[in-house]
Image: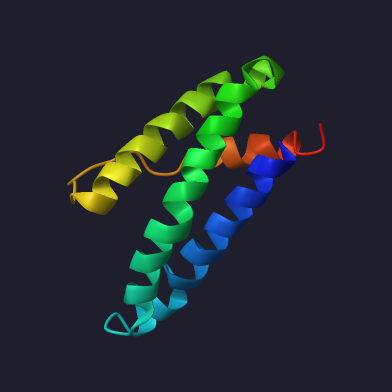
Length: 109
C-alpha cells in the first residue's frame, strides 16, 4: 500500500494547490492555475490512477477485506473521472476519502 499511498499523495498535492477547491481558484478564478490543473490532471493524476488500479489488480490477494468496498468506489471514481477529463460530464463519482484513509492505515503492510 505504500506505493499507492505515494501516488495518492502526489495527486492530492496537485489537487490542493491547483484544483477547483484550491485557494488560488477561490481568490482568482481567472489565474493560470487552471491551465496547470488541466495539465496535471492529464499528465500526472490520470496516469497515477491507472497505476493504482494496476497495483490493486496485481495484488488482489493482498488487499485487506476492509478495503474491498473502498477499492470498488475508487475504481468507479478513476474511470468516471478520466471520462470527465476528456468529455465533460454533469456528474461523476468524487474521490472516495474512505479509500485514502484505508490506504494510509495499511501503507506499512
